[in-house]
Image (cartoon, rainbow, N blue to C red; front, side, top):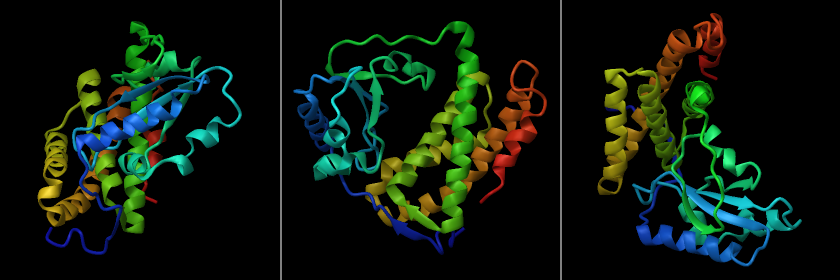
Length: 256
């Protein structure tokens, strides 16, 4: 609808960044940890395909006995403007050497090591892979539903972070298709709109803002539907969470 962006308050307006800005941010972090014996490695995951909209997903792996000041040393108060602009509120993930090898239990991420000594990464056992993916889905989809409902409730739209939220939902939809064969034409159309939004934002920011607001409403519908279908067709079967799973997760779908 022509008035779909009416009533929103807009914040967190994206500004143009380039691949050079992201490279400088990586360089600052590596220089920051290079002399620390209690930092084992720096990894990156995700992609930066839409500079100015994409954030930088970074993992800092600590030794088993980090020094007491490591939290302050890596804290947000120490970040230069360029690094903060690239992360834009994203989490600087911190893991221990003990936990890092099991990171694929959290997500099937593609890791790029930016600095440090080689560390093992243990694959998820084949017998557990499908169930692990199911656990991810029932973590991610309720999170999307609640975040999107909150945006609608408060009518405040942080634009750059919201485009990231919309994009992350497309990832969940791709995993539903790839692992469980669950797909819907409307979801594919939604994902195509998100991709178009990311590619064309800086060519017409005003149109992007309006489309972003409209896609929040669409994304909430898509996320709810995806969760309902997953609970009914997968999680509600005996080998998963049991026949009451659909009703259990359904209670998460109520806005507010």
